[in-house]
Image (cartoon, rainbow, N blue to C red):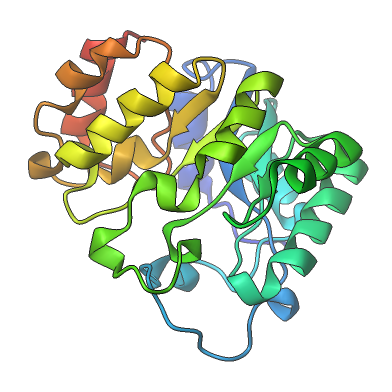
Length: 250
């Protein structure tokens, strides 16, 4: 049974509008892979949105590869894979990503906890071939309310020092209700890049700028960091994409 049905209209739109527009080789830079039975069965205290969990029960390596085959026939898609997890299941989910990367040859990120030492993190990265790390605001110390979590609460500087030495990737899902335009977020992104210039920072979801009001003057402020990268996964706001392209180029 196919993962999902590709209808005649889908094929026509792909052939007429997308096939020649899309490059033959693409990078899917923000790709969660996970198995449902590895995720937490209890309900931990939430300091994150939960609507993404409604998208799919799980997303195995095999389902991901089949999705690319169905959606992008004739194209080569290489994802950067990492876990979708909670603190309680990080180890098992990281192990699945590691095995998926080994099996497929896809690059992968280690899902890091902020309390891990630099030595522990270095061992995970070097022994398992990770190209960087992902973390999330819900891994910040529990005494910090969600709205007050800062970037360095879940990407601590002792880890960033290591990543700077390795020239590794940080997939940064920025916190705080102000999202991309939040002054503290902007200040800490600039601080991160100034102190750790070799860290390859990817701002996930265009900094969660899902409405016009989330953008503010962020791209002007972040012009101080010309090598910042952004992904537009899970972001459908044309305004944010247009302003990003104006500021950063195609």
